Image (cartoon, rainbow, N blue to C red; front, top):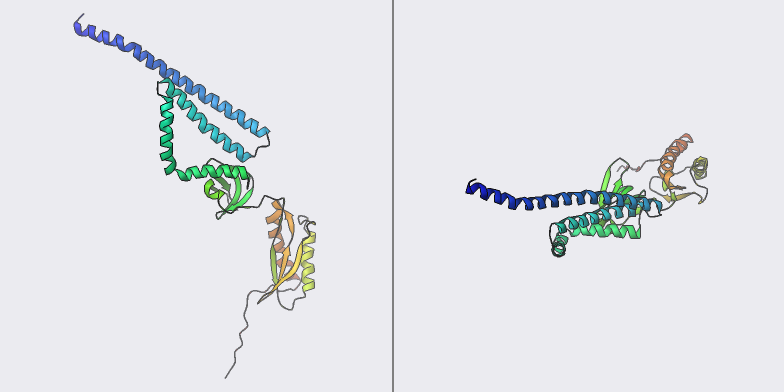
Amino acid sequence: MGEQAINELTTLQQMLPKALEIGWSLVWALAVLFIGLKVMGMLRRVLRKALDRSSVDIGVAQFLDALVKIVSYVVLALIVMSHFGIQTASFITLLGTAGVAVGLSLKESLSNIAGGIVILLTKPFSVGNYIQANGHEGTVTEITLFGTILHTADNRNVVMPNGALANSNIVNYSANDTRRVDMSVGVAYGTDLKKAREIVESILDADEKVLKDPAYIVAVDSLDDSAITILVRPWVKAEDYWDVKWRTMELLNNRLTEAGIEIPFPQMSVHLQRD
């Protein structure tokens, strides 16, 4: 055997233990990664079941699930790196330093996380509520780490940043069980107001979804330029709001017209004077 062949064999013998060590390390890392992901999935399922059995709001449950997921990934990554000899303490220090720099550039994202925490603590709304904020309205379907998802009536999903949402004016239409439907109808001057009131009241009395308590209000609200405005304010369950409003407005037009009561449009009388 030549000297070159002996050198190559010696080199191979020296490299083999190192290669085996690297191979076993990779196998160990893959095993830890596989087991860690399985454990993470199991812990998240246990957490979700525990939260489902408790009285915790669904938005809080979604937020905690996302938080546990991120923390678990970070812990798993640190375990794998420590096996390969990477100093996790130094890495954490470096990560903290980098976190300050990244935090400055991602301050909007961090403010969204803080906003999500504020929303979950103050509870201006919950998942399933119908809200209006920042020019959008819809049903809250999910509260994530960074944003709140609204499902609109025309089947769109609107993602609203938690930071901006937490600092905005929020109208929660689902906060109470009942709502007042504010409507009005104009009748022409000279109309028998008693008769008009009776027609309006008969419509409300016949509607089973109009609540008896609190009682509805029917009153003359204003004497406008072209009409006398009658205020119509029944109380309904929150989920019946639109149904009652649309049906009542249609019935007001039909019943008043059938009774010969004019619902005028804006008009102006012009008198011409000859010289």
